Length: 219
Image 1: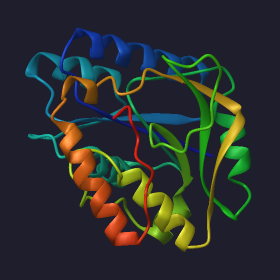
Image 2: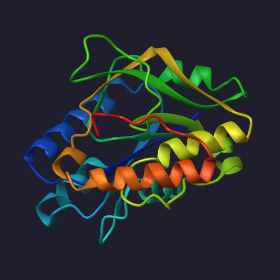
Image 3: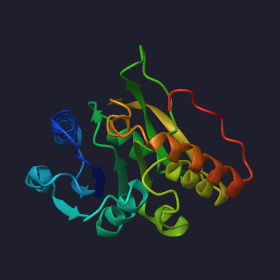
């Protein structure tokens, strides 16, 4: 059993570098299965390139920021694992985070699994079906195909993929035995102009799937 952990990174400042350090340290400490860390550098400032290449088992560099969806696809293409984990670099995993996820994926009806999470504004761990940390079997990825890149830099590439999984007959669940901390919007908060992209992508998603997505006030 092999696991590939795919982490897109856009390091804009020292705060994001420190969050990434904590992310990688927690993964190395608490991931008790055979794994490789794949880092996709989405055109961070040059001074962070060596740092990102040093923390990765497999390192990919983009000459421009192509966004989360394409980075996920690039990582999946480079991955050799039986399981693919897509993780934001502002996540910190807890002890025994990975095996409960893998155990749930032995049920062939389940397409993707997520840990429960505690964000900076939370009192308790919560179930969130967001793309900051999720796991999928290689065979499911092959069946459903790569993530859509039509949404650009951010927002709704994960939600779109959940819909595709459901249309293919799979379930997506949160696993209470698996816990992670998520700093939440650590990168996107530094790019306030992305709010307009959220609105555009929400409209794109709703038109594509004929489904009204609830408006989020904190975007």
